[in-house]
Image (cartoon, rainbow, N blue to C red; front, side, top):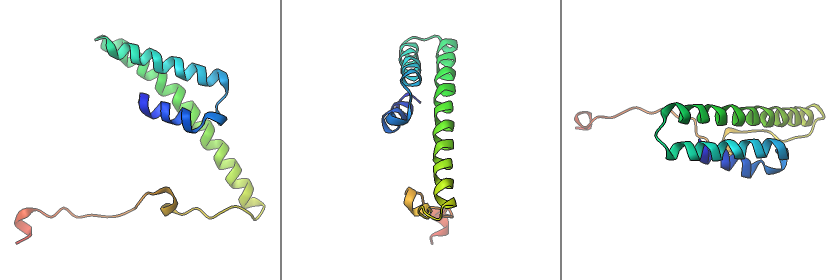
Length: 102
């Protein structure tokens, strides 16, 4: 959770306001400190705080990206979006057990 949020902040640095970035960084630091302890309730509370803040950031960035992509498509511009562009492969698989290989 900490690593993913730090990575998102780094990647989205220009899309994050200074106050929001400071709040998220504070939540990250608080969770790091909580993890060093052994109080499960504090760790869960700090995790929830960070989850809420990073979730709001993700929603806002997603909405901005959806709005800008929709605007480009509306004007006839923009690029087509393919799953391969994301590096994601949609595939099906079947587990083959050793006894089935014979």
